[in-house]
Image (cartoon, rainbow, N blue to C red):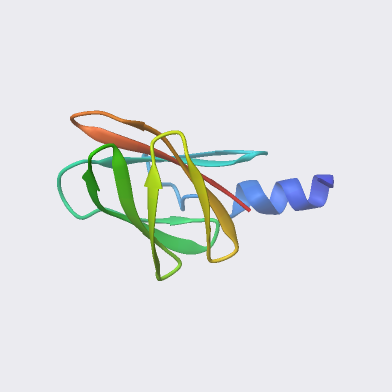
Length: 96
């Protein structure tokens, strides 16, 4: 990845939200298990729809996806992975 692309990637994360942490390799989003949080990450909206049996249902860039813990899938041109699910939060990784 070029330095310019890396700077654009980091600049495109979070909008100052405390639950989005971005680096050169993408953004980590911490969603609360309760509530209806929507975050802006890499220029698109991401939302946790729900969790069932260790699988997170997410909406990324208007596309509904289902991702198991430890798995990844594509949505809106991004790679979306679920790193961890606890009783209180869901940790999601988004990469361009």
